[in-house]
Image 1 (cartoon, helix red, strand yellow):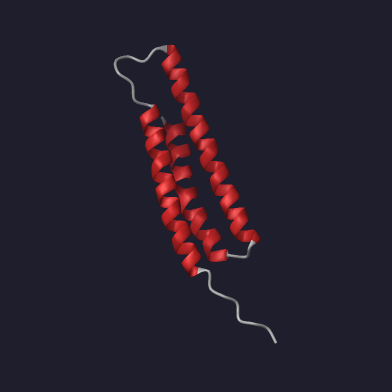
Image 2: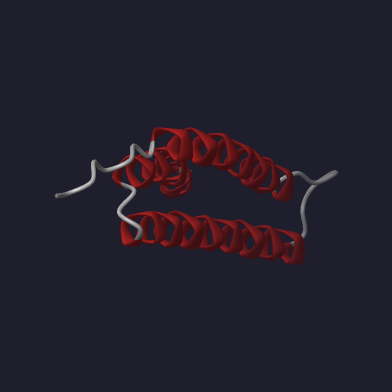
Length: 100
């Protein structure tokens, strides 16, 4: 006889809270990397673009890796929650970067 499958709602809630903190830290780093005092030099502009690109790559790795890990353990609600909480801000940053 099959045992009933346990719900992954508590795990999804914990993952959502941790993801919100991580996304907030990455978003603040993204914004802070664009701040400069006075007119930015060419080196400052290149450094800012490099930092912002690295932050987007890290966010992409966290999004894909966390979603794949949750799917590997068959925690589907956790996987979707992680994808929404980290993926939507990532898409917003990519869209903002391409428009500006």
